[in-house]
Amino acid sequence: MNATGFIRKIDRLGRISIPKELRDILEIKNGSLLEMIVDDNKIILTKKQ
Image (tube, rainbow, N blue to C red; front, side):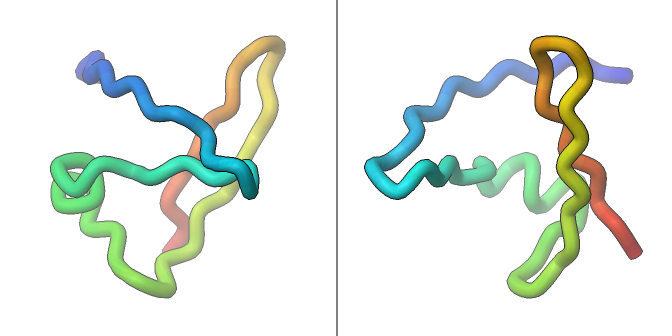
């Protein structure tokens, strides 16, 4: 796994944005499904097919 660091602020509605560079690498587009898993003190996002 390649480590890539981005810092984002949570907006007032509790949202964060995924940087375009990461969306391009992972081919995440509007309507893509992402699974969210909580593991200890981490949130893991996984692109679903």
